[in-house]
Length: 172
Image 1 (cartoon, rainbow, N blue to C red):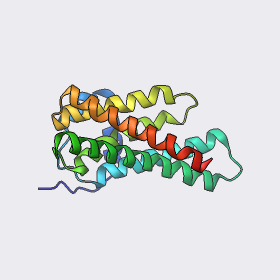
Image 2: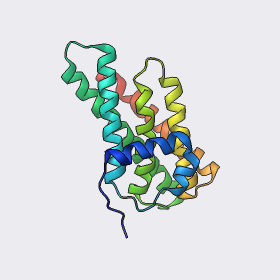
Image 3: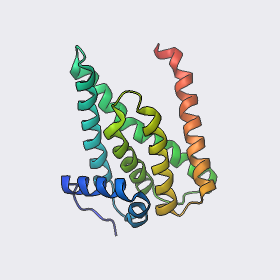
C-alpha cells in the first residue's frame, strides 16, 4: 500500500526538525512507502528558500532570470544525483529499492542542506553533509552496507564531475 498523504508545511517543519536532530533515527523510521508528494514538496520548499536567500544575498540586476536558474539548479541537482545513484545501484546490486524510495532520501537530504547552501563558502560544509545524510539514509532505510553506500555515492559523484567537466567547454 502506497502512503499518499498530502504535503503540508507541518510535515516540512517536523521533517526538518527530525533530520537535524536525529538523522539516523529519522531515516530508520522513514516509511518505505512514503510516495513522491512529500519528499518532492520538501525539496520544493527548500529550493524556494534557497532561491530567495541566494537572490537576497547577491541582489542581481535580473532577479527573475537568476532566480529561475537557482531554483532549477536546486531541484535538478537532486534529481540528477538521485538518478545517477539509482543507476549505479541498479548496475552494481540490481534493483533493490524503488526509485521513489531512493529519490525520497536524496530529496530530503538535499532539502535540509539547501537551507544553508546559499551562504558563501558553505559549499565545503553542505556538500559533505548532504552526502553523509544520503549515505545514512541508504544504510538506515534501504539496508545497504557501508561499502555499497561508498560505491554508489563515489561512482555517482565521479560521474557527475566527469559529465560537468566534459560539457564545460560547450557552455563556456
